[in-house]
Image 1: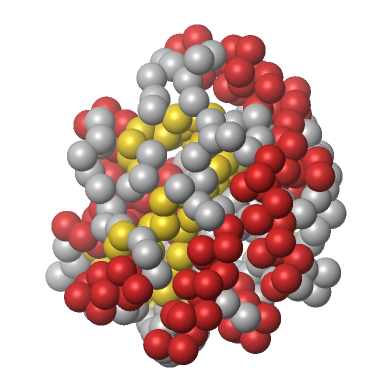
Image 2: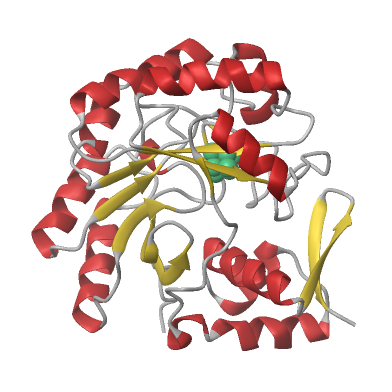
Length: 310
Ligand code: SF4
């Protein structure tokens, strides 16, 4: 029997910001224009700015059509996944294709680094919500925190965000990730505030590193300080995980993950490949289990391993 191909959709998973979200993964693990120190998915293995058909467009649309036929219940269909979704050269075709299939709103979660490209901006402009990132107020901090592809300068990225805002009628929710000792000093916050204001987002959501990051030194900002810094940035501090939309049946993998971890500690990738689920789904489940205290995370060299408590 021929092996079944990997599906390009996962979930729906409960999402902090979007409720119940069907994830659409448009790039292979881990293809991104950045290599953020705080990335929960691990180090970027393919750092690129080349727009390509990283996964077959036809397959992506077929997977979404199948899901609509057998389930079809979610708050958003979200372009995100194992890296930067705007690297897919057919993003516009995919979003337009989804709109022909369903009335569900489409969101794009992006690092925002490619919005200066006309085709990327035009594709994102077809969506109902764009959630870009901005974590720095200068080139130096941008390089330290996001470790971008050499073709992406800070000015290019911020100008891309500004120009996109003029082109797009829908809401832009900017996410700012604050990392202790990297971008959290009062001077850096002030510089960031100016940059953020110039991009005129509809919402500014400020987050910090509460889950195991790629780099051990990427530290968490305590809640009260985060709240004050969010205020200084003109935004709101967002909770790390919101279970309010979690549907019991959708998160049944938790038991399988526990069984796997009882046998041996695993990385996110071990869990995803062991259970045949998407890395983002594994991360979401693990985040919930960390909050509940059923698992703990431990560093082993470059890796983060998860094991059951006790
Ligand atoms: S956090 Fe997002 S933008 Fe940063 S490296 Fe990870 S996938 Fe890429």
